[in-house]
Image 1 (tube, rainbow, N blue to C red):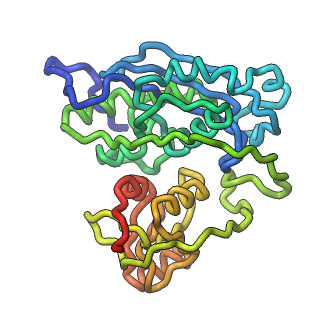
Image 2 (cartoon, one colour):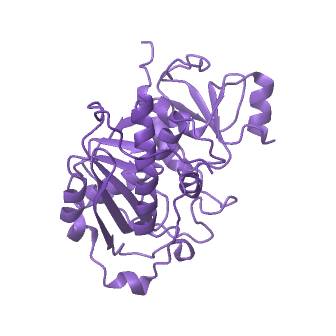
Image 3 (cartoon, rainbow, N blue to C red):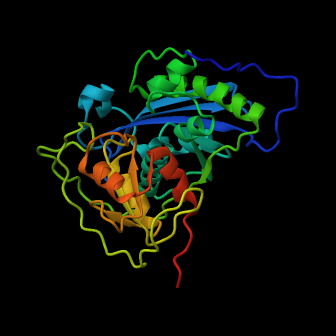
Length: 324
């Protein structure tokens, strides 16, 4: 186990860092676009990562609670819980003016943004910070990108995995030494812009017979027909250069963020989601480049560039426009 000294130093705290954070964890009925939040927790931290207070609530999803074997929240437990619109005001108070911090922050943010949109409100969040991306910036020697690995690295004891309040506590305790390490090394915080949804088209939940999105490695997933990418393929991704609209991106293996969310973000950025690897594939995204999947084998044979999920989510921040 490696630990970083998280004590406040005598030197002035860097003014470049945001003035306050909201460490968030949400548990949900699933990982798809129409899934709902069943519990949420927020730890408010000051600019130096010290805990100010915390808040937790159950949320009635108005539907089946999904993977009870993961989050432990049954229909009976959630029946008397408030609806999201009833907790939105308090949630906003906890988020207002702060950087949203989460493990797999894109997922948490999108689930939160969709709940606010359904409630015809807007979450008061302008920036988010993913602790996976921060651990990459700090080059932490983690065996994988799981929260339990980040917690173990900093000696934080996890008591109830997949309980929103305990997960948020664990993340807050691990974030503080990460923040101090970044300040001491003058590491740029990997902040991303949050773009709130402004509308939501309600649709009934689809039946899930034989389907639970991404909770099991071999889970079945219905195919999704996507519109054709409007931009021509500019070629392969080059290291240390930004992605360019029209590039063909393939994914292989398990991802921390739900695959559909990654693919949605890819399409929204003007990139093409490739279902296989060929000579014209611009980039392969995988957390296990040494695996013997058909995509990784072809990528090696074709010399296709490969990056991991955390690096890819950072690249998605600065996709350059296609050549017109």
